[in-house]
Image (cartoon, rainbow, N blue to C red; front, top):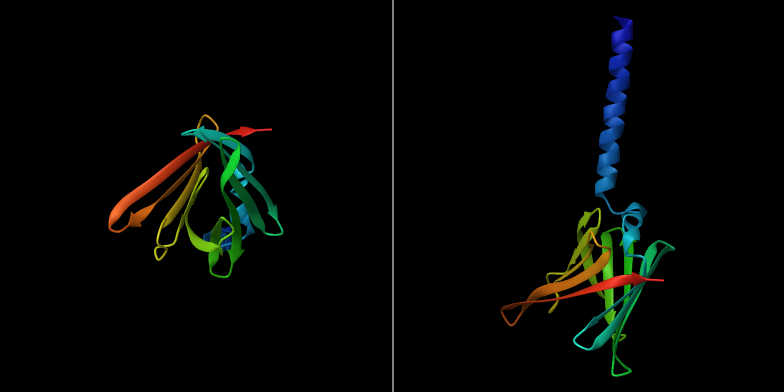
Length: 161
């Protein structure tokens, strides 16, 4: 009987520890950034005559850092800086197009090779998505509404050395 009670106690401790671990996993943390390792690297693509490059590094000091540039006819036509960072309020993706002040988008979905950030109060976009497909292409999509119309734009890039 004592053996059954001891085993039962160990099972209870294990289940309690597992539930605490699951609760911690639901909160923001550096582990969430580690789950985004698939974004790291140099990614290139072309769309409508525009050569695009996106670079992701990190986590460095608790953040992923990104840089995007668009070149058309040999000239830089657009650029953007990114940061994915952890705070007490959650994990946030900060976008800074053309060196504008950063706009925060909160992490709302995190899967094995897909992440979604959202800022419902931003003019456009309200959602930023990244995913890695089965062929190894990195996709990015922005979506939302502007003047009552649903809009979206999507890109795909290949990892290069």
